[in-house]
Amino acid sequence: MIPRYSRPEMVAIWEPQTRFRIWFEIEAYACEALAELGVIPKESAKAIWAKGSAAKFDVDKIDEIERVTKHDVIAFLTHLAEFIGPDSRFVHQGMTSSDVLDTCLAVQMQRAADLLIKDVDGLLAALKKRAFEHRMTPTIGRSHGIHAEPVTFGLKLAQAYAEFSRAKQRLIVAREEISTCAISGAVGTFANIDPRVEEYVANKLGLKPEPVSTQVIPRDRHAMFFATLGVVASSIERLATEIRHLQRTEVLEAEEFFSEGQKGSSAMPHKRNPVLTENLTGLARLVRGMAVPAMENVALWHERDISHSSVERMIGPDATVTLDFALVRLTCVIDKLLVYPRNMQKNLDRLGGLVHSQRVLLALTQKGVSREDSYAWVQRNAMPVWRGEGDFLTLLKGDKDVSSKLSDKEIEELFDLGYHTKHVDTIFRRVFGAV
Image 1 (cartoon, one colour):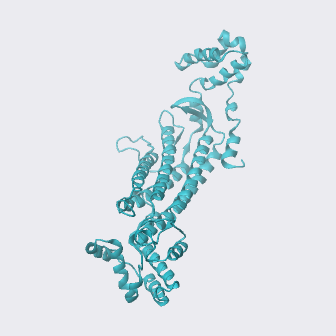
Image 2 (cartoon, helix red, strand yellow):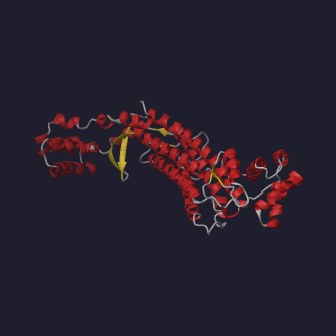
Image 3 (cartoon, one colour):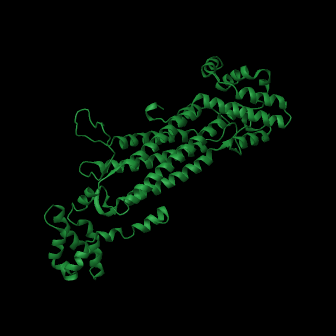
């Protein structure tokens, strides 16, 4: 997590001061519940809330205590006791460190998910706007990187919109998956704390009680969360890669916005490089790479070990901060994307009409020619055009086999670009609803 690829709102979720504030709230809510159950005095629970809420936790002081205790939660509780005084003896009653750590992590991931969902909403809005702007802008569709048949640029963006709509739903499900609370004590048996305390704390924090927490919340939940972030990152990379290809000099159908005073190369003044989408490709790799350690965290020893702890201290902030930054950057790229319809038309025409070959093939089969013969007749006229030796339409008209089945007018009608866009609105209705 470095400032270059970070946004303040997401970073704040993972800052020590935020973490300690959540730790305190977990402890204070637990004290409230214990007071309601008659385990500790209600006056003490109120005092804990009042004094702890007013406290400004000293991160350096907590770190100093931890250097002696070698235990982060104990260091925090020791520091908290300085603010609360004698009533601090009721804090952490019947609880274990994982109750605090895991419940806090759930709150942080929940908040991070909320930001990521908001980011996706912003991206969806930008994609929808640009998709409708270019709904009927013709461009060439490519398979294997080779010209295939005409599509529209709006369809490319509609596909991305549909993909990120799925991303949003996955994030919503992932948020629900990790929104659980564990206040079950050592090895998760509730031997020293009433299950009603867990229910109370969970309700206050907007979480659900973990059905069986052993001494930790099961890490399959976290694995699913980080795997979801990886899938979203992959969708970012897919769209970024498409833009990078479209910006290639030989293609130049779209490109990143190039601002006044921007420089593309330290050596070559003419350069305009797809630096933002290249950056997004790299960031996606990082986020995706954090899914594997999360999956490896699932296999903990018995009721608890801490082999997952060091991993989560890093991937929790890094994955969410990086993905947050990437989603916002991609939104900006789409919003300002420069689109060149004239170049799209130029590329469409580049192969001299070969993009209509399938229509000719199908028309011949409709005239009673076998598919094998139809393919052979069309291909023998297409290959010279591929080599730059003539015009496809002219060659087809001059082919005795083709012309014996199709008139010149029928052949010309097969070269209508509008044929390929007749169902664009149908697809848009599927993606966006009413068009």
